Length: 47
Image (cartoon, rainbow, N blue to C red; front, top):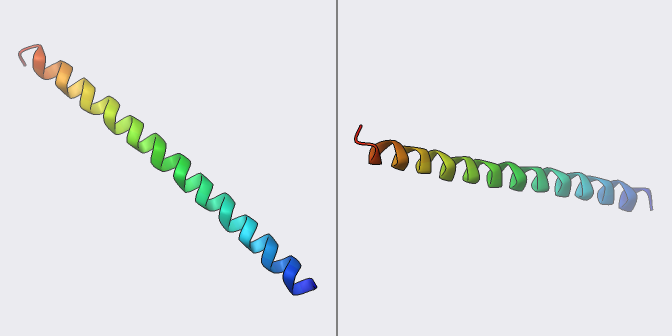
């Protein structure tokens, strides 16, 4: 039973890490789109 408990805790910990990575990836994607929009706006100003 102890091994099952340890395994469950490790899996839960891994799931938390995966969720964090997904959150960071989503933020990075949003920032990338925002930067792309800024570049498009800057280029449309004739610079």
